[in-house]
Image (cartoon, rainbow, N blue to C red; front, side):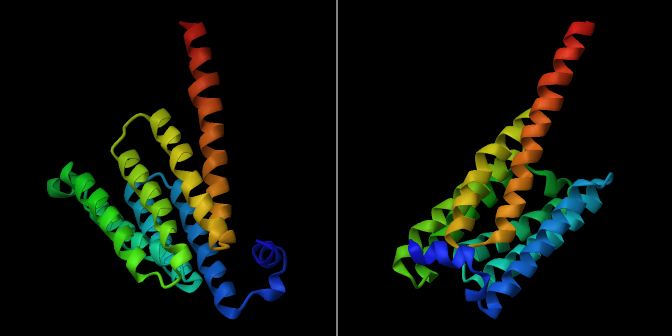
Length: 198
């Protein structure tokens, strides 16, 4: 535990791969933030696709096997969703089942690929996060979407702390703050104002 605290507080102990990992993570965060500012859903997905690829590289250089394997599957999920506007097959509900199944299988596979036996259990964290975000993608209520962000993000926070992923924690913090602000401003304050007006 003391060693973990030391590496979190002393950047001089980081190796080149750690810095490369954080750089890719920062690029992923920037891609995701830009994606949320897009008016066109296709552009949003393109930026999320680039963000997913950067997260794959981030976890690759961190040596976080489950994060890498599951983000590869997550990247495939974004690619399928890119075709939703044009093709009916990409909008079929079966994709939710397919990707939830792939996330579970990918997480189990990553347990076998993880060399450190003390880290094998950590695959459970991104499995839970990806299952929740896949369910979130099927929702139409923005309130429920924000609630699912609050449910899924703690799993990533735990995973990022274990693998010392500062860029991941930055992304998680932005997600949580955005979801909380959205719930307070849109789902509570604005709805109360509308109810009073009616």
